[in-house]
Amino acid sequence: MSITTLGQFIIEKQMDFPFAKGELSRLLRDIGIASKIISREVNKAGLTQILGDFGSVNVQGEDVKKLDIIGNETFIWALSKGGEVCAMASEENDDMIPLNGFYSKSGKYVVCIDPLDGSSNIDVNVSIGTIFSIYRRISEPGTEPDLKDVLQAGNQLVGAGYVVYGTSTMLVYSTGAGVNGFTLDPSIGEFCLSHPDIMTPKDGKVYSINEGNAAEFPEGVKTYLDWVKGTNKEENRPYTARYIGSMVADFHRNLLKGGVFIYPPTAKAPNGKLRLLFECIPMAFISEQAGGKATIGDGSRILDVIPEKLHQRVPAIMGSANMVDKLEDFMK
Ligand code: AHG
Ligand code: MN
Ligand code: MN
Image 1 (cartoon, rainbow, N blue to C red):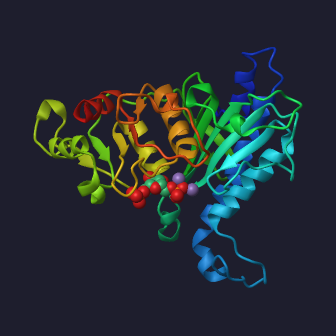
Image 2: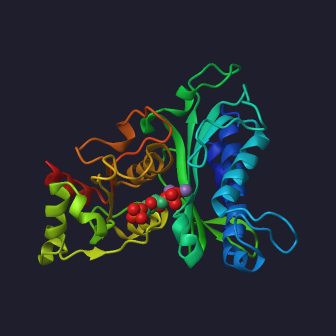
């Protein structure tokens, strides 16, 4: 049998760093455990109709929680266990999150999460995801962590990844040496290496954008959208539109097949809708690690944006390198 489980893979990688204490490995393992629990809950999502909705009480008389909340609590619980993480930040919480009710002073790392991405798709049985990122803390270990530990630019990332709950559950992550994808085999309850060394195609023909907002897009994006619909065989045009409305799922398809994911500024949301810390930075990291690009529309990298606040938003163009460059040309 030539299966490599996520756990085996993490241990193999750790052997490349004989002086490492294994904290990052344990942290990744804990993320794997949280993901499996969320995957199980996601698979039961349709049953909440039978057992009771959020805000109501199910047949056992227990409060039913929304999947976003379950995802958030599961991650906080899983990362509280090991002591590697001193603090977390989540799309679901206004402020930085202490673990076990207090900030662990000894933990070396901080973790940012979007526990449930694409929540509007939960009720209609469409793919959703989880996004995570890991930084080394800036504050002195042994002291109380500080907001600056979480507000780090993406170019400081130690690792990042996402889980897509789709036709199967898949965990994709990188610690800065390429991207690997693992598919959950429910029969053994393990993530198994299914997509080693993912490289995204340089070109593609899929564009993913909520074109319903087109009237509010910057001129460059509008002319680009006309251009993608023109015909030119050598340039793969017309492109194909694909938009699920779950960033993780849209991104994942484009990563494997080639494509560009775009969330531009609009009049209503001048910085776009997506969150820098919880969505854009981790996905940009994966994109670049797989040979793609991720920018904010003025040519600069998402990974170079210095976050000023936890729930900051940023425009995003990410995916196949040549496709990102092309849209950037239109934005000049
Ligand atoms: P979340 O469910 O975590 O709030 O994220 C939803 C995000 C992202 O997943 C998706 O790409 C985007 O919102 C869709 O936005 P529009 O509905 O504006 O297209
Ligand atoms: Mn999200
Ligand atoms: Mn979310």
